[in-house]
Image (cartoon, rainbow over all chains, first blue to last red):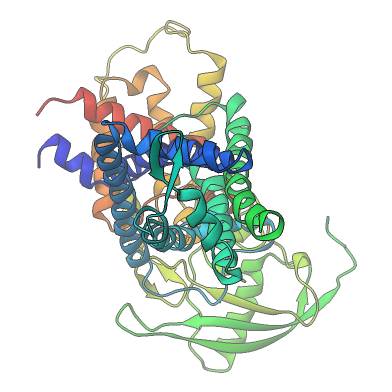
Length: 222
Length: 257
Ligand code: SF4
Ligand code: FES
């Protein structure tokens, strides 16, 4: 096997690919979350920001790239999970506990990841490919995404599902960001604790930032 | 530590019994009285086995050798934890004072596809030997010994290499890992050489070959859960796995073909 092929099929190579893709997605969710916060500024700012994004010619390249790393991340994750599950064919009567217990986030990455996968697909259907309202600002007629968001977040079921999914994202990132650094070989006793703390805070800032939108719409904005 | 008061426990032991690799295996329960809290876990197993022999039953097979925490031969998953509930401790160094009167203790073999059960609690850890054979050595032309301190090694590197080299190859990391990954073991073996001058000539092939063999044996991949390091009797740290990851990546970049 060529050097590249054996790297890409090794457990470490697949993890590193997954980790790099994961870090890319982590940066993306940050920018997405910050964009969402414009809802607090008002419909015009929100819609104009969304319009600026989709009317930029680079959007197709960006979207294709994003889809690419998302698929790469998910495929490697699922592939590794299948391999890892096959490495122990009979499970224990009891799992690690007490002084040797492990964190909830670390052992549920595949579950939180699956929730995020399903969420993302539904999310694209609901918003990106959802009802096309328009709004006119000055002489420009652009998509009124704000109206759709307000409409969707009237449903308590949708709000609950959204919040749960975003909690899953927070848990996923709180382990995932630090894990990606370790997988890529970044390691220094002086910084390891810092990276883990950063990962935890990053995950929860992202989750809470996203959650603030439906909470605001459902309870305050109406 | 030791109570010295000769406190005795009455225990129920749920032990995994399996005739051979082909057998599907099952738990059997045994009651054991008068277990001194000063006994080691393996002495308790010896007492149970003597009782089984007297009852003309098949004694429980388990691995052990030095019984002083240095050989890496003992194993067992005790109540869900490889080497039992105590950190930085092998099963042979675990004492019955960690348990309470009336406890039920579940005893299982190390479970991994790459560690097939031989009998009862004995598993074949030969996969580790093959990982070491793939590159866990240095080739030296013999001759006169180097002058001491001819090649200075920083204290930090020396300490880290030494820590990695304390791995006794017991396999608890594999047993504890939810992915049955051998990353901690392989990383310890790669690290102890990667940090020292003696390890440099074969550094690139070592990382590639040992990781390749580790994957070939059917161990899972690391997801940085950390169960390995918590189970490890020598407290080998996860930092070694990060080092292995970068060794592997750099070695891939450095090799031709
Ligand atoms: S790393 Fe620790 S748990 Fe794994 S084989 Fe070495 S000593 Fe045992
Ligand atoms: S028997 Fe040697 S380490 Fe336990």
